[in-house]
Length: 288
Ligand code: GUN
Image (cartoon, rainbow, N blue to C red):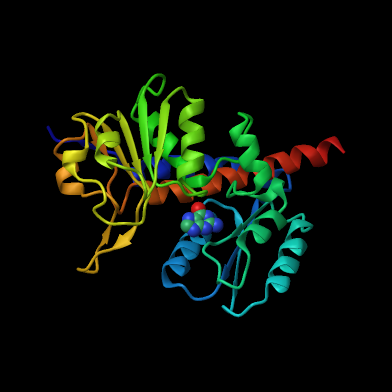
């Protein structure tokens, strides 16, 4: 058996087209949707990610500002910049690229972003709303994974889903979204005993560990859907995921490639969250 390849580039393009149409409607109403992206420091991977995010915004007709600051920026200066953006009515979404330099408390930073502009969905209010079943913003990567599963008509009600990786950015919100859709969810972490036992029982496996080759074909149930969230640079300089693509593809029913899988979906869902933030702000301003 050879698994279908889930094309994230193609699906992301259709989502971005929809965002562009919504952005055009808002713009005719006098509201240009705006996203501010903040990068502190010079991490090369983060620089690529933020440039891609800003470029995708421009292409979809959203206004975006990229603010880059040196690695020794003080926490106070960053918090003060966020507060200014919170009250800037031209900005509907604020994203601070993670990880931040060690001297900055990322929790403080995330909590300073207005929950209504938190297009990453990382603010505790947004995490709480997601957990209690009334999300305002869904974190972009898990949201993108849900769209990929939907596009494949994967039945989530009653499905067994195993998530490898328990981060606040991917693993935990992924679990909330899958559980809300009716799946039975297990979150595995680096201390999980016999990881393969868990993954072998799963209809859906989502891997987000940052460790290349973490999940291999012998750990997958034949026909399972495998979603690879990892983006790593291999010894050969090429991008690779957390999943051993060659062996897993032989067993899985469907698999996401790296590159061209979850990555483009994360950016597309950031645009969706930004347009939703702008649409909400526009409705609020009309009702005032
Ligand atoms: N670093 C890795 N993924 C993300 C993300 O989705 N949002 C932000 N802000 N930082 C990240």
